[in-house]
Structures are given as structure tokens and as C-alpha cells.
Image (cartoon, rainbow, N blue to C red; front, side):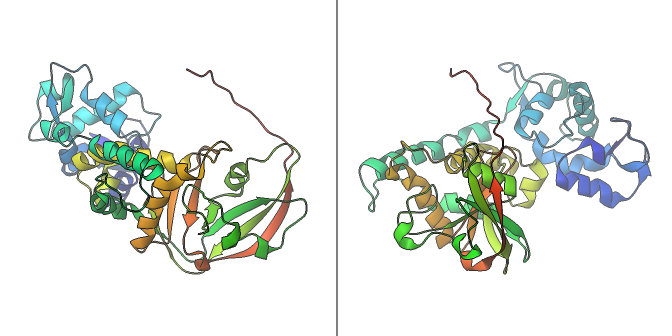
Length: 347
């Protein structure tokens, strides 16, 4: 049976199917005259995933449900659950360890994943964060495996090419000159999620709208938005959307699937810490843990760290350590003419 590029969202699988260069009809999403691949040909890519699971009488989660929960970016969200189950089962019939219990009944992860204790790094981080904020700044007693953390982070590296455009906004009563849109001078640099007091970084966003949201402008505020161009390639550690990276993309980055499943909660924790908006009630020392992390990434030789925007869903920001690689070439003066609020009950 054939599946097609429309069945998946995972970039690597779509590329594999496209490279096959065969047009046909998909047996799952029923697309016609589309790039297709026989499901049997995908088993070499799915084997490592299937090997993570064993049948379990202690679980109520089926294999296809677990896979979708852990890899939300793998399949096209438009596919029904029934279709996804059929697709996984069809691919799985070529798996050496295929059994009806595994593919039709409840499953759990193999013991090796459980023994890695996904919470270990998170607990280390909590102890470290508490100590650096409340007890010790420079000689830390809490054990945090920073080298292991670094080995994970470097596999999340990416490079932005020359000419890539980013945006930065500043509230202003009149249009600012482009020279005024860079990072603040050292004497004016307050503590941020990424930068320590007195050590300014350049914070930029991927779009004009995201950077406007990041200013948290009020209705009828005015601001100047600068457009920044990359003069040199930018080496970045990306914590963006770590919860939705696909299993085949993550393998290409050098992770074993079980390894990544174990440390993903910790990476999500770091991403969330960086994404939190600065609040008036925050104390400068609240940012010390993420400042430490960013300085370590800087020490490793990277130019920036990238993380999701909590102010604009789908947007993302970069804290750039080496801002000489960017130049502001144009600026636009804007009015905030409308704001839409969404509220949810506090639990």
C-alpha cells in the first residue's frame, strides 16, 4: 500500500517520499497524482521508533496514540485517528518484531527509557536555579551536568544564512533613527531572560508582528520597527518548538529516539523559561539561571539562542550575543490601532 507526502508533516519523511519520485494514488489520504512510496519502504526509518515499545497490561494507551502524543508533528493533522492507526499498522507489518499485541493493544515504553529518569536533569536544574538565585552566585554547590546539557544543545544547532531578515521594535513618540534600534549601551542594559545586567544582547524576532507583540504596546502607542539583515551566517542554538520536532528530524540531529524522549521535558522547560515575558514584579535575580545557560551557549562559540515567543503564538525570538553580524537597514514608524484580548479562567 502507498502513502504520500500529504500523510506526513515531518520534513524528513516528506523528503524521502519526494526523492522516490513516483507519482500515484495514496491509499490513506486518497490524494491523486501525488508523490507516493510503498509503506514497506519506510520500515527502516520507523524501526527505531517501534523498538521503544512493548505490550503492557498496565497501560491504556495504544501504540498509534502514544506515537501521535510524543510526535505531534509527524503526521498530517488532517488525518483521522483511524487513518493514522491504519498507516502505522501497515508500515509495522514489515517490522521484525511485529505482533498483534504490540500494534493493536496497549503499550508502554521499554524499561531502558524509564531508567534514564527524564526528570533527573529537571531536578538538577531546579536545585541549581534555587541556589544561584538565593545562596551562591559564582561557586555553585548544586551538581548540574552542564557538559551533558551542552552535548544536547549543540545538536539543536542551526545556521541562518547571509541576508536573513529579523525585526526589532522600540516604543517611541517619533520615528527613531536606525542607529537607535540596536542593543542598548552597556550602562543602560538591564537584566533580561538571556542577558546579565550591564551585558546587552540584541533581541530580535522573525517577523514585524512578533516584535510588535514583544513590546507589549498599549492601544494608540507608537513604535519604530527596524529591519535587520544578516551580514554573516548566524550560528544559533534553537529551542524553538522542541515539543513538536519530528522523530526523523531529531535522528538527523544525532539523537537516539529514546534519548530524546528522555530529555525532551528538560529542553521544553528551558524553552519555557526563556519564553516567559518580563514582568514588572520580577526581581533581577529571577533571570540568573537562564542568563547562565545563555552565557554557556555563548562560551561554546554560538552567536545566539532561539526560542518561541509567548506573546505571539507561532512567532519566535533570538537573543543575539554577537550583534556585529546584523545591520539595521530600514525602519518604519507605526501606530497601535487595535488590541484583542483573550482570557481564560485561572485554575
